[in-house]
Amino acid sequence: MKKTLISASVATVLAAASFGALADGPTLYGRLDLAITNSDQGATLQSGTNGVEVGESGTYIENNFSNLGVKGSEKISDGVDIIYQMEFQVENTSGTGDTFKARNTYLGAKTNFGTFLAGRNDTVFKQAEGGVDAFGNTNADIDRLVGGQVRSGDGVWYYSPKIADLITLNATYLMEDNYATFDPVTGKEIDKDSMYALSATLGDKKLKAQNYYAAIAYNKAIGGIDAYRAVGQVKLGDFKIGGLFQNSESIAANSDDNNTYFVNVVYNLNGVNLKLQYGYDEAGFGNYFKNVPVDNTNTVNKPKNDVEVTNITVGADYRVAKSTLVYGHYAHYEGEFKDS
Image (cartoon, rainbow, N blue to C red; front, side, top):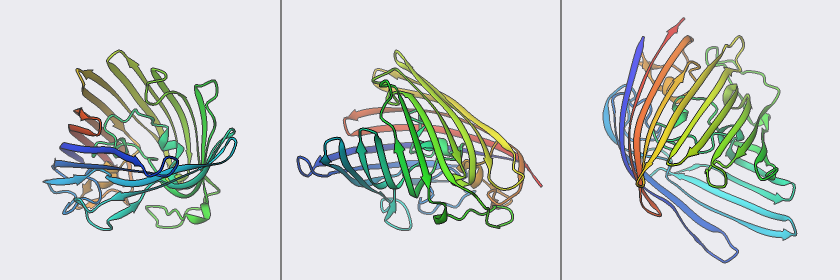
């Protein structure tokens, strides 16, 4: 059976508005991002969007992860700084449910031997994407296609100093006693020995210090999958070319591993970033496949195999001012699978 989804978004965003409360004190920052979106099934809309009925078409105001936060640091000795961040997603602009939701919030220390964090944060597996997600934080984010894009609490993180000013080694470890993972088909809890992620990055994800970025990463049990990925991006004049490959497998017994990949190109035309992306998924852990309705239900608890999802997204953005960006895109998803 086949399902398709088409969405178009036009948005404005007020980003990175911040000020220093004190010379050495905390920094308050925020981001307001609203989009007007037309979707023929609603399967990729942000989950908190008001009035969405997955499987029905409509036009909505969509909140793309607007947030408010405070961060700072304090030197306690030579080579040791205490660092902290508290960030909250703001949902009262167009969404339902709680006004504030937890985002990256942690306490840590930055030392000559690396940075250590404890609390809630994106896993290093997710962070390995760098800047390759051309439509990040929108309804065409790569998490619509790939699994493992997880922000986790009750964990610890380590980031090494940059080796030779190029390479960073990173790790996430979650306290598995804080988590229970269940088989989506049987509903039984799955035994797991550990939950962690590892990554190594090369170059500069912002493509400024170096004109290239590359990463490899491994995810163990976090988000209910075992996975590995490779990411690469390069800047050639006015072009940015990037891609991601990922192999994923459910931690449920007798699961198969399958692949997901996408490639994209961004061209800067007099300040306008023109974007084109193609993606293909046969694993079924992305938000689109889990949300798309089949026989009036979603697919998340339906036994399935031979998953095949394709995605084409085209778009553009333009920075009007330092803190204001306007953008738009058109995304098409089409998929099929066999159920048991």
